[in-house]
Length: 96
Image (cartoon, rainbow, N blue to C red; front, top):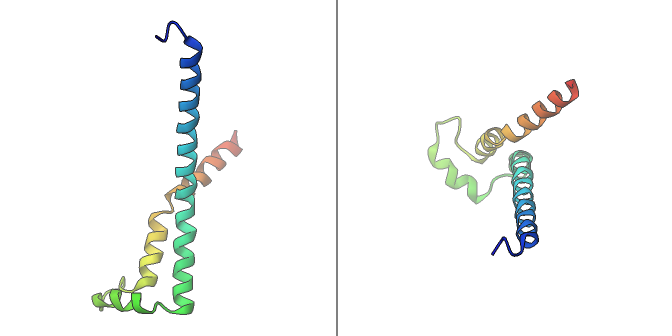
């Protein structure tokens, strides 16, 4: 069937390629959005207070990692790999 209509199969492959590219771009932007989002959440929690959510996380008292603020900061750090890759790629491109 593709031999009878090679143009339609090429168009379909092109459309699929654009969908894959769009999906990759979306995933990349979502990865870049995670770090500042968690950092802002940590800042807002520190300024405005955690409220009831802090009570839930206070169950692990005695640990440096208890509470919402350290959790958001750790999540921000764990998601920073996308930013580090972006910086690395730009430096490599600037060098030539």
